[in-house]
Image 1 (cartoon, one colour):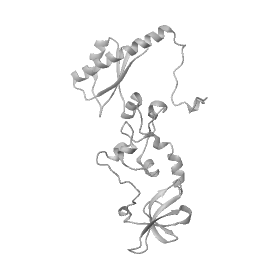
Image 2: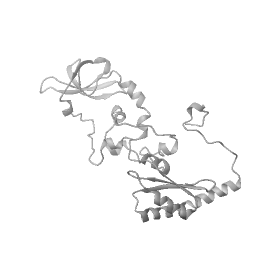
Image 3: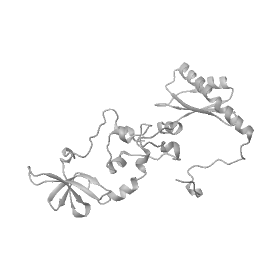
Length: 254
């Protein structure tokens, strides 16, 4: 979106106060801090290897006044880095702070191109993360292939939430997949829902040799309140099968 005025209620985080416009000395100090970054990362990575800690260094920054150095890392669990902090403090002669961040924060710091071809939302404009669930992908009728609904961070795509409220509204009152409904052609089982078009794909039962798939408008069918216990065995030929051989779908949620 273009630049626009926002009210204080819309601001995600408390903004830091602006002291003054940066002068040439300030710009030079900032440039020097950035130049020292590469060396500091190399030193910290070496210390992590020396201490044999199970952590991955992501980024670092000097505070503007050079009184503190902050290192960002990821790890699978809690890490006892007290000895590492002492070692780094003795080397840099300043206060050391280590911050453990999540995989989504990792991508937010580094950035990159998302599957859509644009810069990652978290890097370009998202102020904070919100929970994303696999239900959002199901509501939108997306393939549940983990490789297609996850971002660079390995978690569910943030953009799944953007249209979720619209899909939730469109799905209200729609029979669920597996529900038995009455159609103009007789009783059938719902095998797929299309909330955007307001239609349902139904397997109409006309005897053992006369079953057929057909699409019906949501207003032209009537729910019976019954469920087809065998609906899991009904395979919609237009629905891509779930492939979770490499990744547990629940592990994508955050």
